[in-house]
Length: 338
Image 1: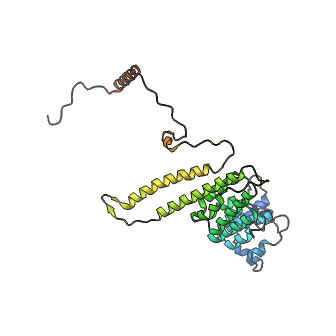
Image 2: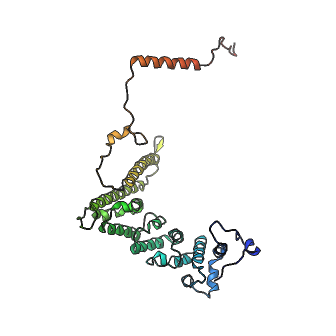
């Protein structure tokens, strides 16, 4: 393969920009634009009807492979070509550094977006089973919510493996937060077994089992809360008028109040997802939370004002009101009737 040596008038007429961005070579810049703009089916015709997988697997000379494959990735995303996306993604078990297309997780995320929801979830689930959660966090964000059963099971199994390995749960706080929001609420009962505190292992981090138990308890509690919300919101009432307010309107108001409460609970559960070791401070009782300001600070205590200060304050207020009052009208304006 040979990249263009110049950007001639014909290339510029077809939309190729002649000036590359800073830090980019001219030939690689021109090559990337040409490949990205070309229809992908033209490559199959050019290579004698070969499949996208066979074309991607072909050797590329002169060290242009990375540039060529990156341009193919952009073309597959732009043209929404699922066949080319599968070829450039490769098998989920293949290490990203040695994959057929691109090793960039950002590019893989865009390629996955061109696949159907079920196929996308199965690919990410297989990727997690092969490589763990450390490299799959960015890919989870492109999957449809709630997660399909294979994907949810793969995430939970990977978290269970991380717990057995002796690591702390705050190393996976981001995945835990996603699981609380994206797992199917019906999985709560199946995850109940993970809330038990396991026996402490010799090679495990001190106290890790208890921290994992708290994290899974929070996960199960959030899933059950989401299940209750879903059951409440899915109850569609018949639009029957009662007085001046329709019943669906009243139900909607209660749903909005429930939504605000649930948003607060989910926010608190996400913030508390990282369980740090050390002395624990009890939370502010709910009965006292009404006196807390929006920034989380307690207001200063109320102080009493003496009678002399109160009189001085009243006189100052009266003086200000007099000074700011409009000029008085000496004579009343005669009405039109008179």
